[in-house]
Image (cartoon, rainbow, N blue to C red; front, side, top):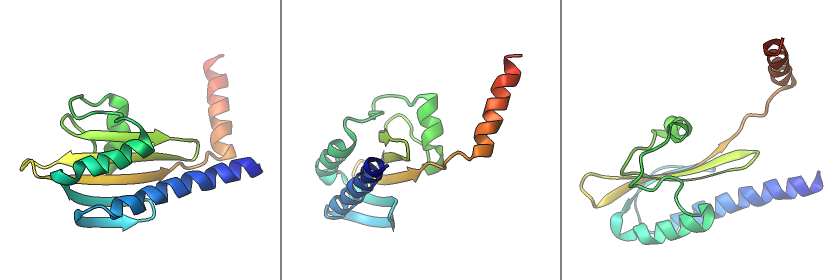
Length: 141
């Protein structure tokens, strides 16, 4: 239990550190800034610095801009505005949260809207687990 608590604290610190490092970049506009959601606009000339930070945190893009999104990616990103071909998605997930970075280039080819998100997963209640168990039992009979 003690180890798990340290792991959760470590993950939270990594995400908050990522947000702090991003805020040190030259941002054109900050639209939303909370503990688990940062939306901003960045000039394309600053993109290399941003992608370097994102790749250190997330690894390579989950969906590069040249790829079309899968149904799962569309579903996962829908609450945040979605992702399409020509846009880039970075993502990670652990047992407590999902993390996303969505990059949406503007048609002027000069600006990029970016959303960096921590989405905390809702724990399943005993009632939810009981319902799943009963449904599974009913399907097998």
